[in-house]
Image 1 (cartoon, rainbow, N blue to C red):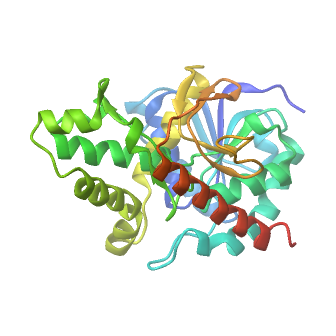
Image 2: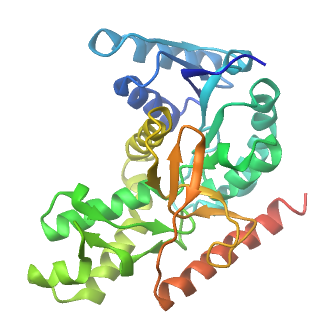
Length: 318
């Protein structure tokens, strides 16, 4: 197998998410080479040409359509291939369709590249991260999903709007499934070190339960609302892909809520879901314990059971 090129990325799947992620990575200047793969070769070629025409305004790099042989030296392989979420369809409704696609795509990747990092972005991301690990044979630290990175960004954005502060000063996580059973970890949330509840009261916000419910639902239902209005959601996840790739390429040791196989984390083992993890050049380099109150702990266990049941019905039975 080829020596890994730390400045090369591959995008598998050139739909809305794949194309937007490529554009975000082109803008980032992180890579000198990005190869696009899609079952519709002309779609990949069109996206590569379109994005490449913006290179005079960015950093020099090669962006081109290729085949699986072209990803043998890619440091990061971003997998967006899969059916999109239709209006009224949950992420978990996508399971059978996209697990079937992964059974074709993931072995193709593993056949040519066993040393890179595989970043799963297609939905339902937790189930597909588990499937990718089983199908690829990659070590667990080098195959993980975007998880609730975007959900967490949505939470920070909505809290920033609610409190009239820069969302970058808000520190909070969405954990568990990237989907309907996700959990906002309110008890550990803070604004620049000030516990969230205290900061709210300092600014005249006292209806805590109502606000938490509204904001939590707003985060959870964001994708559904966007899909209803414009048919797909892709800019936010593209920025999440960029952020995760930055953490890897720059070896930042950033703490992000990515989806990975758990090992006795709050008693959860053997499934992939999102919990805070340290992300650097080797992928997931460690987990970060997060304190939860009893209500959040119960919700996390429910989220894990939901995913466990889906895995049992759709993966372990086949």
